[in-house]
Image (cartoon, rainbow, N blue to C red; front, side, top):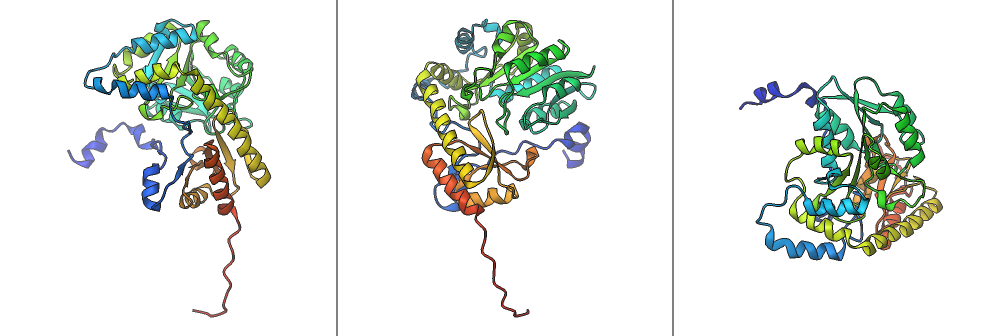
Length: 379
């Protein structure tokens, strides 16, 4: 098939889509530098997965030639018990990003439909909407946080889905449970709200979330959680959603039957059974977040206070240039120009020694460069 015929059958909206840019692999950076590097770019748990999850994965390797349980029966039952929900209120995904896309596939059907999110929110919301050719509505943030009142005002008769993140990636900011209650009171009940709580376990505020209570109350809400962050299982791609049974049934019709692998499911069950590892991970993040923010304050570098396991750092310089300079120092972070922050980097909270190395490298990168003396010789 020729190039021209492929473009002839391509949906017109697809040419406007800008693919999600993945982070630079640490293996590639180490190959280029010829030495080890530190990855602080993707908000992974620096402590890695639970030892129980590692053991479960190793044990299951002798069974990977079999097809998996496509319904995720055992994991969904574990999750339903954990959250005091029915199993038919749980849906599994290959990471929460899979479910972000699944919602769009299920409920958006072209340009007549609209979906709403915020500017500077997780880029996958925008991609999921644009992939379906639906109208993308983005409202400005207020104080680098989702402006729920502005989103409510943006709802039209065409709006079907709203994507929210709490805390938001990449800003790390959050809204309260009372804010969300007021938001639901201000929007039509027909609109589906997707609430991405990927960093739920890291938040240490009593006013943070009552999202599962809203699910139990039957709200038109899908709450997303993931095993990629605090559980340290980003590489096996496992997430889940919680909603009312009717909503989950609609999503199950469109879901790929094997979207959550067998290895992911057994690892997820084991990870749920290791509360000690989760507590250790949260405590490490809290301690190191305090260290990082304290040192950045002493250095006079502005950052956005974060409820997650990462920081949005504003160096007041071109973020792409600082990203490259830090790469040469063996530190991988994430430039945030794509998200509307041309002078900011997103940095994962790592282990203490990793955070120390990042701060030392950042200090070198931001140090004034010596000026080249002019010789007066014309060429």
